[in-house]
Amino acid sequence: MIRGIAIVWGGLVLALATGLFLLKYEVIALEDDLAALTGAIAADREAIHVLRAEWSYLSEPAYLERLVGSHLDLVPVGPERMTTLAALPFRPVARPDAPAPLAPRVLNPGQVDAIPLPGRKPMTAPRPLATLVTLPLHPSRGRP
Image (cartoon, rainbow, N blue to C red; front, top):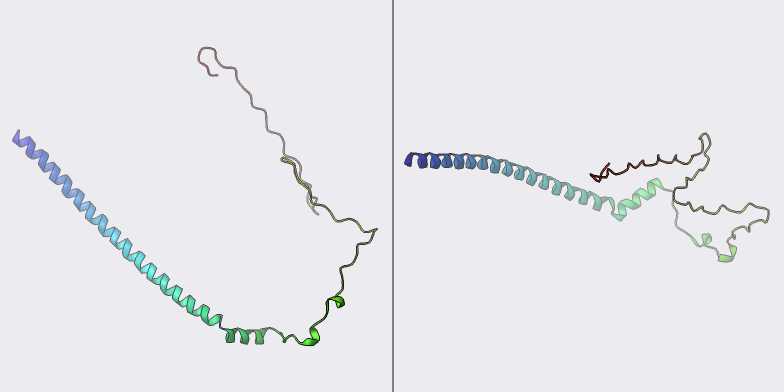
């Protein structure tokens, strides 16, 4: 009897030792992952810091003014470029013989919009699906 209890306790101690051994190496692997993630976070923060510094340089008004002066032919708006509303041309009036603009079409569900394009065949409506065949129920089992 004592021998059986000793074997059970020995097996339990061996199982616990094996479990602790595996747990130790799992914790070590998780600590390595944590260290790698911490390093990646630090590298990302450094990259964000560099990008913010670059953004502040690129959005500086003096730098933008130099770029505009070297790449665009912009001149200040003078009073000679100002005008009155009466001097602006109005939109032309539609002629009575001109074709009316196309109104937008509303499609019904299942309708295919077939706009003919050059070099393409017009779209056709899809074929209807085959009808579902129902089998009669078996009288004793209640299923086909």
